[in-house]
Image 1 (cartoon, one colour):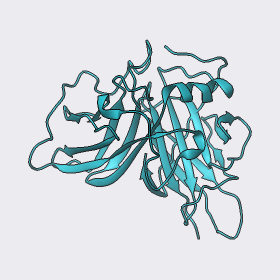
Image 2: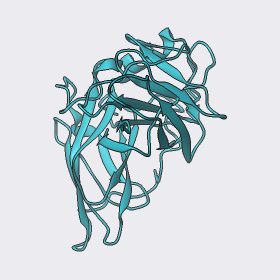
Image 3: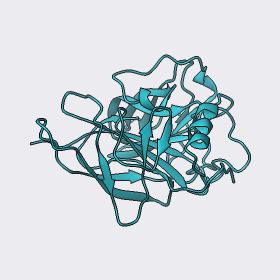
Image 4: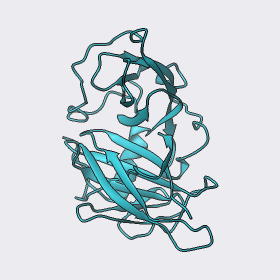
Length: 256
């Protein structure tokens, strides 16, 4: 179990509304990610002939505000030691050095949980829910050391027997939406503030809402946008929460 200075709850993820981007890699420290989904599943091939392709990139964000984006941020990390797999199957692959990957999902599968585990690359273990088939997926994660720093400076404690969820809110022009608050009867939310998180609503310039110590398998909440000329509407969020893993979702808020 990995812990940071102070206790806190932290999670962010968005569901309903338009999920515009489905967004880790050094061996995790002791106790980190031990509850990896289907960790015992053996590596598999590209899948059977009736499968459907899931293709995209593992993307490493240098700061809290660098996600989302239209493409992966340039990464100094060689991602080829990571493993990308489809949860619930034996199908896995190694991305190339810049994080590109492709897998064939089993025939009949319409939604898949794509999992990236670090190997020796030094990023945070992460998951992404994707439709099948999908191309251009962005499975976002962070450099482990930087991510630890974000949490330490918040401060927040992450018990890795639980999950972390990040949700980035966009408007119809794909711009980050500041001034968003999250509502739920069960969750405590954190919000972006430069390269740290704050318990004070609303979102800052990155439009990031987060939940730490999320208890899955799924969390649900609403994102309430500011009232302005864009006509943004409250948007419901459903997010996967996998113990020891980060979930990052990029969601286009509903609008009038």
